[in-house]
Length: 274
Ligand SMILES: Nc1ncnc2c1ncn2[C@@H]1O[C@H](COP(=O)(O)OP(=O)(O)OP(=O)(O)O)[C@@H](O)[C@H]1O
Ligand SMILES: [Mg+2]
Image 1: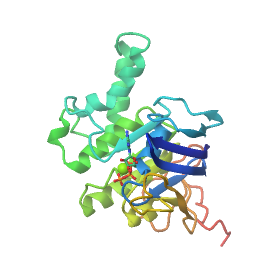
Image 2: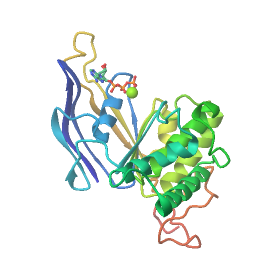
Image 3: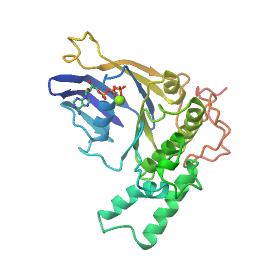
């Protein structure tokens, strides 16, 4: 679904990424790890369309990636993904309003009511019902990240890009939001690429863990050699979106997949008939 072919990214004389080639399957959850400064955020920005590759191509669903961020790609950063001057509801509605403003000045009438209803539903889904009128500063860090997820998801992106979104949260809160993240990934048609510093998080959430590393990392070499893919690990047993995960604390929770009935027996993760 996403094909990254021999991508290089340079800033001035500094080579940040080199020879990055990678195919990401539809509905994968890729966890991206690597030392600080190795270009993880840069790689996400390339996928988002916020930066252009110096060389190489990125193809999304068979088409070259649009050179600017669009509604098919959502993003959540470690901090500051939400707007401090808008309420929870205002933040979630924002994307819809921007979309509407391409046609007319703003959302009006029935379209506005529908959008508000959808936003409220999503706010409830991420566990923020009752906080619709609060401002981000009145929310805890975990709540702000839940809000950032809702804000990204209302546009129903195909690809969700996460840059250490849970890195600043306390372990307990982080575990809760992992459960939410897993549920969202299971229930929506999302392919996720998540940067994290936390290996446990990578293996808890990912279907695949990839690592970036600079092959040469002496101070005098750092600018002339970019990082590239050094490890690519498929989680075993394989984890698939919409399929119950025996390790997940959320395994008894609802997993609805379009077209699948809850009464259907879940295939075993190994895919064997036992
Ligand atoms: N806009 C820019 N202009 C110039 N250099 C940049 C720019 N953005 C990033 N860099 C450089 O690219 C390198 C990789 O940065 P990047 O933020 O992608 O690393 P990272 O892997 O996300 O690090 P961290 O784990 O600390 O977040 C760094 O050396 C950084 O200084
Ligand atoms: Mg970064």
